[in-house]
Length: 386
View 1 (cartoon, helix red, strand yellow):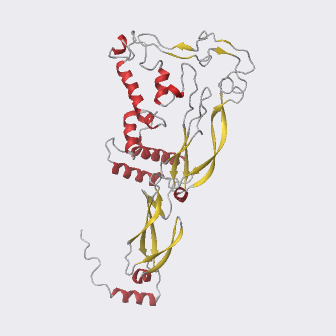
View 2 (tube, rainbow, N blue to C red):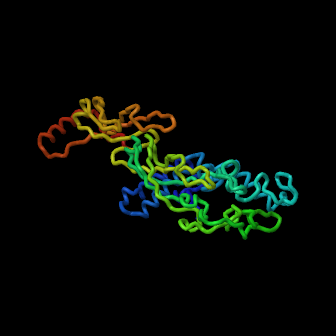
């Protein structure tokens, strides 16, 4: 059953972008794996929440999802061709338009416009028709794109890194090269399709064919391949070196060209898309391209000002605390934030100063606190009114 991203986030379909963000943050705090260690259900729930936000939090993805559902989010999806298919579905069956003439002017309504079979329609929607693969002739076609989710820590996402993944995926059988036929067996004409490679699958005003299930569209058959039992495919494990670029964030998609499933009839393999999930950090928080960090300072540093050292993703740096700094005051460090993957520019690091009072019953400290209180010129709580 298709997932309803609006239902996952608990929002209505007309929810604003701010409502979507609030719902995501609330659910992410509840179901984050760090808050639910070892809870597989929570981990799966967090992934669903992240996928929903990745879609609905992006205006373009949300538009496609609202019109086409999850299919609109698939790699290689062509919305123009999808609308052509919708148009065929609306007029070719119910209204009577395809009964007299199809879109190419052929009498009888037996055609699909520029499509010759239902596989051409569905294949074309996702880039597997036309020059990339022809179901009718058995021409080479690109393999399917696949997705793989990985979870990384925030610092790794900000700095970028190289790693190696071990993935299991479907690949062509090395013995039969994906044909499903024992290469040492003699070939005979397929009895099911009579050698045409296609069989009829419907009757009535609209008829179409599909590749013969016996010979897989080749028109001839042989003994099943002993290694793949005639399927043409086997499960293979591949180790892939991956470079995660600097600045990826929650929901980022990293494309690895040619690392998807094998193509058919000798076609090019599909692509692998890594869906990035980022763990929360204890001290560092990311919002857009900016980073936020709370830094404690002493009472003396707040009053007198001075230079303090803080950690950043580029290493430790010294910053100046202005005299008479207040708790909650924010210092802005330009170019020390997260990398924007599109513009290649970095955001800012927002350092929030938190004045920490020492915990002690030492008489000297208490006397010093009383002396400091004398310097307040007004009642600090005078403006608090309900």
